[in-house]
Length: 103
Image 1 (tube, rainbow, N blue to C red):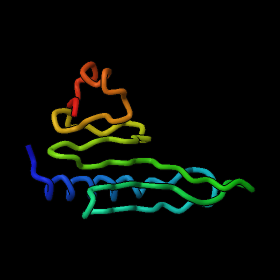
Image 2 (cartoon, helix red, strand yellow; image 1 turned 90 degrees about the vertical axis):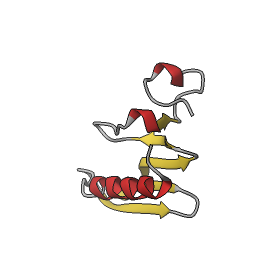
Image 3 (cartoon, one colour; image 1 turned 60 degrees about the vertical axis):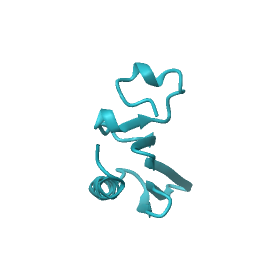
């Protein structure tokens, strides 16, 4: 099991890597949100597509205790490291069936 500082670095590098993939539509900006004090990390796309405002979270990861909690994963491939990751977007009773940590 990695320590929190290692998780923070790993998550930040992961989000930086994904930030290079730009949406194929619209005039979009990619925002990286790193809150090391509270261990919240997000990759968000914001901008305009034609006349519509677009804002969406691509990745949202938190560090809670000794686990990485995936609050949102909008990537095509998904992220892994199953023993240290909790898929928070699954109901608690379903997590034991995912192959990831349960929390």
